[in-house]
Length: 101
Image (cartoon, rainbow, N blue to C red; front, side, top):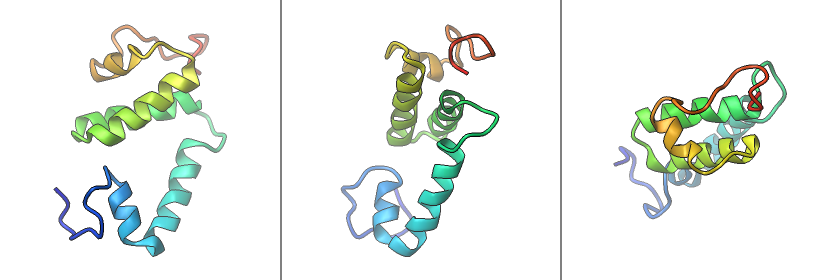
């Protein structure tokens, strides 16, 4: 439950907070774009796996499934990868040459 009285409490996850304050939403979305989409030393798949793992451990279903679905899409993997992220990547190899980098 949010500690801020949201304008629209029906919006899931961080979407409600972004809707509540467009002035702060803009720089937060720009930061997310830099962290998750712009080229750097980690692949997009790896960054989405990290975001999905953190979101899962923070017990945020919306963010976890959003980031995990993005990781699956970037990896071209089976949707079962979402459960594997929850399990700590028991089945999924994330290293150079794995197809995920």
